[in-house]
Amino acid sequence: MRTYVLKRLLHLVPLLLGVSLVTFTLMHLAPGDYLDAMRADPMVSPEAVDAMRARFGLDRPLPVQYLVYLRNIFLRFDFGYSFAYHRPVFEVLGQGLGNTLLLAGAGAVVAWGLALPLGVLSAVRRNRWQDRLCSFVAFAGLSVPEVFLALLLLLLAASTGWFPVGGMRSLDFDTFPWWRQALDVLHHLALPALAVGLAPMAARMRQVRASMLEVLQADYVTTARAKGVPEAAVVGRHALRNALNPLITLFGYTLGFLLAGSFLVEVVMSWPGLGRLTVTALFQRDLYVVMGSVLLASAVLVLGNLLADLLLALSDPRIALE
Image (cartoon, rainbow, N blue to C red):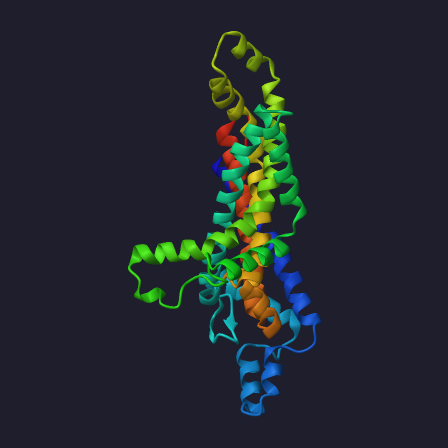
C-alpha cells in the first residue's frame, strides 16, 4: 500500500503542473493586471508601480515568470505574494482553505448522514409510501440548483431571523467564551451546509437504494432469512455492509462535488472560504492568489480520491492496490 500511495502522490506532480500552466495562461490572456489597476490610482506614482513590477518579476517574459513561480513553489514552498492583501499567498489561503474544508465537511455530514438511512429505508420499504416519499425528496433535491437553494435559505433566514444572513461569526464573537464561539460558528454554518449537502444527499440516497436493493436479492441474504435471522440483523449486518463497498468509491466524487458546491455557496452566502477568496482575487486580478487557490483545490480533490481508494481497499480485502 505504501508504494501505491507514493505512486499516486507522484502522479499529483504532473497534474498540478498542468493545472498551474492552464491557470497562468488564462490569467494572462485577459488584458491588464493588478498593477495596471494601481497605475490608474493618482495616489500611486508610476515609479512605484514599475518598482513593484520589477520586484515580483512581472517585467520578464511570461515563460520566465512561470518558471520562477514553479521554482519558488518546489524549492521554497513559496506561493507568491498577494498584491491586494499585502501578505504571502499561503497566509491568505490558509484560513480560507480551512473554512472551505469546514463547510465541505459539514456538507458531507449532511449528505451522507441523510442519504444512508433514507436510502436504506427506501430499499427496505420498496414501493411503499416511505419509498415514494424518499424518491420525492431525492427528485426535489436533484431538481433545485445549489445557487437557487442558497438564495431560498437566505430568504428563510432573513424572514424568520432563526439563522444569521451570511458570514461565519457574530460581530461580538471575540467576547464569547470558547463554547459559545463554537455554537456561534455552528449556527452560521447550518444553512450553508444544507445548501452544499442537499444536492449530493439526493444523488447518494438513490445510489444507496439501488445498491441495497441489489444486495437484498442476493442468495446469502435469502439464506440468512431462511435460517430465521431477524430482519434488522439481515439488513444491518449482512446487506448494508456489502452495499457500502461500491458507495465508498463515490466518496472522492462526493468530495469534489461538495468542494465545487462550496465555492458557489460561499459567494452567495458570504462564507469566508477559498471560493469567495478566489472570486474576489479574480476581480482584483490578484494573480498569485488565484493560482494558489486553484492549485490547493486541485490537490484537495486528488487527495480525496486517493482517500476513497484507500477506504475501499480497507473495507474489501479482495481489492488489491497496485
